[in-house]
Length: 171
Image (tube, rainbow, N blue to C red; front, top):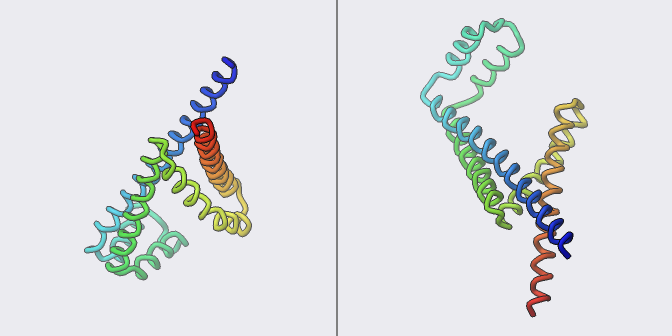
C-alpha cells in the first residue's frame, strides 16, 4: 500500500506542476495581449499612416518593400473606432487568460475547463494553417496546444473519477 500512495503522490505532484506551468504560460499570454491592448489605445489619437511611415523610417526599411507596403496598407485601413474595438477585444481576451491562469494555479475545475475549451477552439484553425503553410513552428504550435488540451482533459477526468470514488466510499 505504501508504493501505491507514493505513486499517487508523485502523480499528484506532476499534475500540479503541469497545471502551474500552463497557468504561467496563460499568464504570459494575458500580459502580452494586455500590453497590446494598452498600445492600441495609445494610438487612437495618432495619424496611423504617419506613424507607419515614421516606423518605416526609424527601422530603415526599404519603402518599396513588402513589409513597408503591408504596414502602410494596414494603417490606412484602421480608424480610431477600430482601434478601440480591437483594444476592447484584447482586454477581454487577456481577462479570460488571467482567469484561466488563476483557476489553473489554484487547481480549480473551472480553470481546467476554460483551458481545455479555449485550447480546443484553436485546434481546427491551427490545423488549417498547418495544412496551408506547413512548417516546423506551426507543427510545434499545434502539438503543444494539443498536448495542453489532452493534459487538461485527462486532469478533469481524473478529478471526476476521484470524486466519484470518494462518494462511493463515503456513502
